[in-house]
Amino acid sequence: MLSSPSAASIALSTTSVTPYTGKHQYLYPRFQGRYLYCRRPKEFSFPSIGSFFSYAGRRPIIPMAADRDAVTRTQTSISSNARKQALISLSDKTDLDILGRGLQELGYSIISTGGTAKSLEKAGITVIKVEEVTSFPEMLDGRVKTLHPNIHGGILARRDHDHHMEALNDHGIGTFDIVVVNLYPFYENVTSSSGTFEDGIENIDIGGVTLIRAAAKNHMDVLVIVDPKDYSSLIEILRRKEDNQQFRRELAWKAFQHVTSYDSAVTEWLWKQCSQGKFPPSLTVPLAMKSTLRYGENPHQKATFYIDKRLSAVNAGGIGTAIQHHGKEMSYNNYLDADAAWNCVSEFQRPTCVIVKHTNPCGVASREDILNAYRLAVKADPVSAFGGIVAFNTIIDEDLAKEIREFRSPTDGETRMFYEIVVAPNYTEKGLEILRGKSKNLRILEAKKTENGIFSLRQVCGGWLAQDSDELVPDDIEFKVKSDRSPQENELSDAQFAWLCAKHVKSNAIVIAKNSCMLGMGSGQPNRLESLRIAFRKAGDEAKGAALASDAFFPFAWNDAVEEACRNGIGVIAEPGGSIRDGDAVDCCNKYGVSLLFTDVRHFRH
Image (cartoon, rainbow, N blue to C red; front, side, top):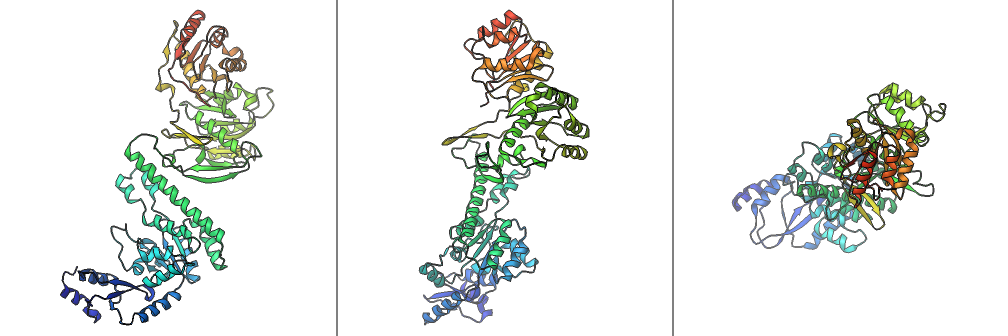
């Protein structure tokens, strides 16, 4: 850096111009012949002038002419004849060469930044670097590149406001017609295992967000693009020379939505760094439309499916991000049922099959032989299983696929079982081929196990409920013996299995199970006694010696659910406890010689 007036004179001597040191204004030469007025400060800073021109390689400072009108006339002429300009600054450079060539062919001057400019030049596209427009170098490790009046003035100026255009002319600023920007890869950085806090901070985009918001605000005059998928539409509109305000508004909406989703990720990440609790005082949930559904729960309701774009949901698995290998498009009810089946089957450690109808598991079985588990799951309630969703926590190979395709209903031994959806974590090539042959409509999903730690959201009229997901499994709790008789090892295992099944059944929930197989369940009844009777009706004689689990405590025992269960031959009952009449339940079980276990954990599901 120069440090004295004499040094400044030496630096500028190559231009054969003597620096002007009076009190008049100077003109800084700008892009395409425009000039920016700059009044000399009280302490004239020669070093900044010298370094400026040594960096930019620009023309020297020109002393202001006595006749200012001449300069003004020159500026007005330059501005009125300015070429169309597009500003491009991208992190995701998908199809950048196609965009650049398209704009260049249409006569646009392309102004660009850093890596984007290099990519365009490599593709043989003429680029004007942003520092040539701002006459100021990129600084602070790239934090400041486009934050400059010469950029934002050209974006924000309204063309229908004379005083805006006069201001641009006064300051020698050209207008921008198109702004194409996407943002630093914040999502990718903070969700990677190697990302540090410092990396996260540095990947918070400032300049890009500002450009997008400015262009979107002034969308009547500036086309703003944040998605490479819109490049072809943009070029086509420009070629037709259409002033399509609807197109402009849609792009502006998309731009603001892009920024909103980005900012929601930043706030979610920073809240997590603060460690001030799971639930922030305000919350923005970014959602991205995946598909428009044929209808909602019923044909007269319109519906759409959105992907959860929260950071906590990235790579978290679940039905929302499942791969569909075959079949009709998913419906609203398909998503609900598949989600219920997948969440249930994913809880089991042993090879397991779960069959769901209307979000309730109607058949569950665990066996080392997954084919046997499938048969037992169907047998639990073959009528309900028909037309349901079947889910596995193991790979579907050729043998299992054949069994799914050919298995006949236990009700008549003839009717081939029909399913809406098959869900599994993986498929062999042959297994997938066989299932595709079962039906052209059978939806075949490949899903990843849902990760723990994501809080769930549910809408009520006028608000949202947020809660931790229910992640407790039998290994996390203690099954406390309250009766005189302790359960045998196999009875305890059955009680734990039934308890885990009941967790996924709608309240009031009762599950009867034996040998790691659901025998019957009652769900969704306003009173627990009725759910219990439904479960026994399905289980039949197999209920004798089986385990019974309830999602909540029994409010009454004598001449009610507990005594009825004991009379029907149940061997062990698992319930949360907590009723003021728990003593009655203990006495009742002792009378009939039934083991009673308290879990201290309720599993309501509404």
